[in-house]
Length: 435
Image 1: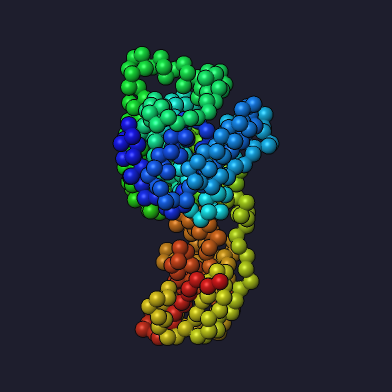
Image 2 (image 1 turned 60 degrees about the vertical axis):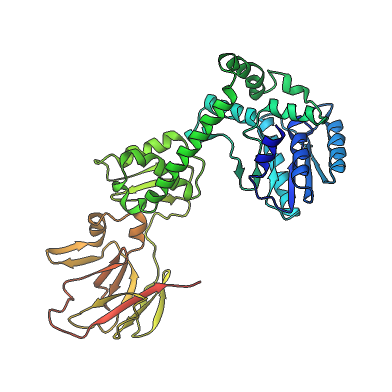
């Protein structure tokens, strides 16, 4: 057993300073003991939380303080004084991990070691399965996640107890762990898992193996989904339908939205598969909407949206002078722009006295080969999203007639102004304004 634990600890690259979470129970006592054996010269910081939930809490704190001195470690403790009436287990966990984060920052380390073991993992997987949720949650706890390291996940509780007994280690037993009605986890630990062991004594390692398989499958799914997410906004139709749901989830998460329901994802998939509804939106939260706009999709923050098109004062374009408009700077020039700048060539029949750059108006029209069309109608025909319509810009003459309109970074010229002769070209160049 000693060799198995040592082998696990040797899998990790340990920093010079390591935070060790120690409650005083057998799991964390074995963790502290084995870490000191493995890392004789490391600076160990023992982190203990006194929850004041049991009469023995203060005695546990003194015991852990003594252990820290025994193993030449720094002792750090915090007390949970504002105990809530509901969701105690979750809020205790949040408080504990916030404390660990503070210590990691204080001691300039990225390693916080906790003593979760194989039985804890099995209980976690069963709880997730019973409560429902995402498939990936059945992968259980990760062996390493950001700062948190869990080297004992493949070691059972009994193996840790055997190790402690072999090395004559003392620990404090939390009496509430034996109360099956204290928490749902205790019920699984004291009632369900012992009954499952009657069917198969190796139920705990088998559940852990199942969780590891799910983790590997999820890694494969994530790798493929990452490729689809790169092009989903402009070509979601090319994604095989079986991959659409996981890709949508990943896309939304990459946008910073993590609180959503499975039912919302199914609504999004249904919207995308509805050919009779080329546009639509699904509300993901109070302000965030998933928007389908023909062949394009995006997330829209309604709190930042306005109901009208962006109205900016027009600017007069002066030849060969960069001028700011919206988030870009523009240059009207008779010299071909640099290759690193976006530009468009205008072969105009007659150069207007003045040129203006402005936002689109509802009355704007453009002459096409087959007749005139309002820009509002043209935007619909081109299947522009709401954001793309707001980004439309117009090049106009002194009579406010539309010479050209910019849509999706491309310009469409009014055929009434196009020259059929070989004339000297002019260019409109633009670049994003650096702020």
